[in-house]
Image (cartoon, rainbow, N blue to C red; front, top):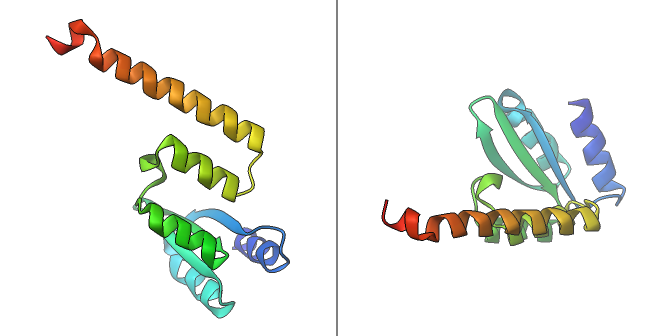
Length: 121
């Protein structure tokens, strides 16, 4: 919970607008109570029975995530992933490289699915 406290500190000091914090699911209630006590907007994604991702920060950032409407980061399109990485403050050049790599990967999968051998199999 020390890392969560540090993330809350960074948000409250204006160092970050959106934070992604991965934690044990057993700590969910305590984390939610802390965020509510500070009046910080948040959104929880289940990772596994024992882990969660909790996004918190500016209400506008949390609303963007809600409107994307996915229940898991693995469901994000390349475009949504790019937006999220940028919102989290990740290096923009690295986000561009990640986006292009994902798009190349998407195209390779689509090409394989559309090949003549694949269609008749």
